[in-house]
Image (cartoon, rainbow, N blue to C red):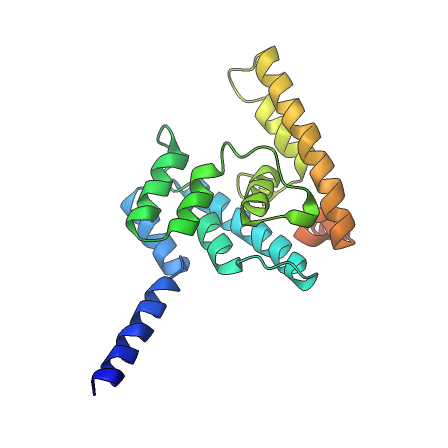
Length: 200
């Protein structure tokens, strides 16, 4: 009897450890913290792109935790309207006992440099996806970085910093596309959406 009870408790604990952020938990957090709708859509698109990249890498022998990555991406900007939204978002996830997702959210704004593509981890995928999505649409690196350069408060120093980050990110994309055997535009849909536009 005791043994069976112990096994039941173990199962429950395993279940807790396997808790991930799903769409329902995402919506609860968005409601609780009044996340603006355009930010919600951005999180959805970053999650979509992250999962596409991670699944392709896993098919090539990587062992990325897609559930954790998707969960972190779904809420990475939940507190974007706050200062230090990365740190505050991580605290929310720590309180939910989701330390891995919390760590991804905590680092997503300041992570640098990327690992080489053959050693990609969940943090690399999340940060790359975030750099390729403008608002709620995958646009690729050029358009996303130009958008950041043109934001209010433009200075030569900020532009130089963004261009430096862009050059580093482009090197990583080139490596990653070599590993994947396809371009990120092909994988994430920019080329497909351009084809659809030309068909109309």
